[in-house]
Image (tube, rainbow, N blue to C red):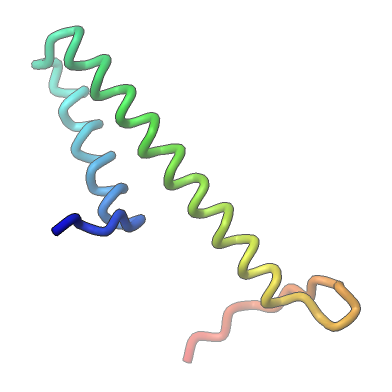
Amino acid sequence: MTKKKTFEIVIKQLEDIVKELESGELSLEKAIKKFELGIKHSMYCTDLLNKTEKKILILLEDANGNIKAEPFQNE
């Protein structure tokens, strides 16, 4: 069974990659591969956050198409 790629899972993987790179114990080849994977994870998270922001703005749009920014009400 494949684990679903969630924001939280990818962020955790990105944190692990940063720790590995900061350790200085990887060979140059492995460090480059980890760096490439980190960039992919970063792009995935950025894309997901941008899509989420667009959804939120759509939800806040009124009938005239104006965005009505309101503070988050914590219930």
